[in-house]
Length: 191
Image (cartoon, one colour):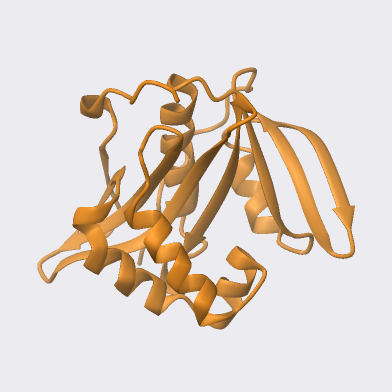
């Protein structure tokens, strides 16, 4: 098991053009209500893209995994929208270290539909990539639907794809997080 990351450097706040605030931070047991509400808001299509299944059982198991993440070998970060009505978890990113190779981790991302294609997934992914790199992760592996170009666009902002396998409509890609090339700054948009 690796050493936990330094807590002070793990949160960040971004401001959307409309003035709303998004906090990018670790999520866990104290966020149980936010996580449960987030999972309940995932559309069937988003659930299918995230889990390759739309079943509720998979989502319920995921809630338990997110709540119990150790924030060391299993990093779970959320994008929490903060406004006058309270806080809402709008996106979740995970980095799950490979127990056989501490430099590799599986990466996954999900956002509730109203927050998709606004740049929040990219911001959260970039933030989690910095945290993962600081904990020794050099490569992220992604699994998903081969016809999901948005995920590939998000991943372009954090690393260089070094392999891609597509089989029966499913893709497996590996990204180099350490030898990454600089990318342009991504600004969130919300109207």
